[in-house]
Image (tube, rainbow, N blue to C red; front, side, top):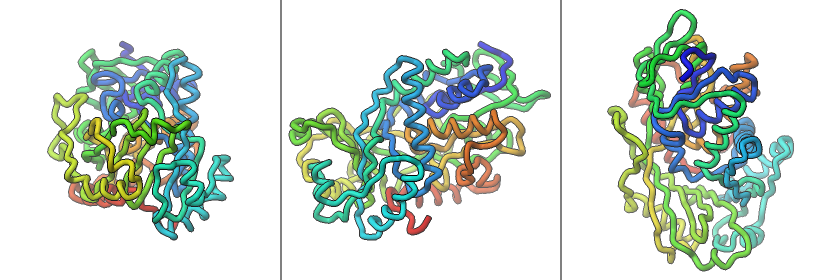
Length: 408
C-alpha cells in the first residue's frame, strides 16, 4: 500500500470510485482509495442504478448528465460493461401546475443539448402502456437516460482509474484522521498513510469519521424500500423496454426489471436508522421490510398502474439511504481544514455520482469548480446545526418525494 500520496479518497462506493477516476483523468494519479470492505459495500450494492436527466435546477441536471457520460466513458476505457439500459424516463404531471413547470424547464434542456419533450396522455400510453392516464396531464420525457448496473459501473470506474495509475486498497478501514505538518495522516488497519488532500466519500459514515476533528457533518440515514415484482405478462409480451416512471402522486419511481417492475418508495413519514451511531460491524446488510408502512403509496400505484395490483412480489429491499438537510450532496472543501474535501451526503449516488466527481476533481486540480453550484458546497450548513434540526429538515425533504418546487 502507498504510504505517502497526493490524495486519499475514503470510501469505495460509486461516488468515491468516481472521484478517484476523475482525479486520475485530470492528472492526479498519485492517489489511493481506501475502502473498509469491498467496493460497493456501502449503499451502492443495493441501489436501483437509476440515471436520469430530469430536474428543476439546470446546474443539478448537469451533474446528472455528467454521470451518464462518465459511466459510458469508463466502460469504453475499461472494457467492463456498465449494463446501461437506455429506456428513457417519464416524469408524470399529476397536476396542471406540474405540466406548466415542464414548459418552464424545456428551453433549459435545449440549452444543455439534452433531448426533452412534453408528452400528451396519448403519447404516454404508447410509450408506457401500463400507465393509466385518466388522472394525468401529460409527462416530461427524457428519452436518452435509463439505468445502469451499480456493481458493473463501479468496477468499470475502478479499472479505468487503475489503468491511469491510481490505486485502490480494499479491506482497509480508516480508523483515525488527523492533520500533520504537510497535510493529513490517516491510520488504517494496514498502517499509516500521509496525504496532501483527503476526500471523504464515505456516505453516512462521514459524520462519525469527522466528529473527532470538531467537524459537524449533518448527514443521517433513513430506511428506504425497493420492491421487485414477479413477472407481469403485459411486460413480457412487449417488444421494447418500458421507460422509467416518476410520479409525485404516488411518490415513487418505477422501472422495468426483467419482465417485472422495480419501484422505490419515498414515504411520508421516513424512519431513521442509527441515530445513536452506526454499528461497528455493519456491512452489506438490509433491514426487515415493512410493507404496511408503504401501503398508502402502493395503493396509489395500483391506481396509476393497474397491472401492479395483480403482480406478485419477488422481493423487498429495505436499506440505508444517506441524506443531508436539504437533500443535496455535500461537495467541495472545508475551508477551515486545508486539504480536506467532502463528496458525501448522496441520496442518489448513482444518478449524480459521476458528474459530482468531475465537478469536485476539477475544483481540486484547477482551483475552482467546473461551474457555479453553491447549493452543493460542503460548508453551506456551517458547524452549529444540531442533530434535531438536521433530522427535522431531512424528514421534511424526504417526505416531499417527487414534488416539484413552485419556482426556481
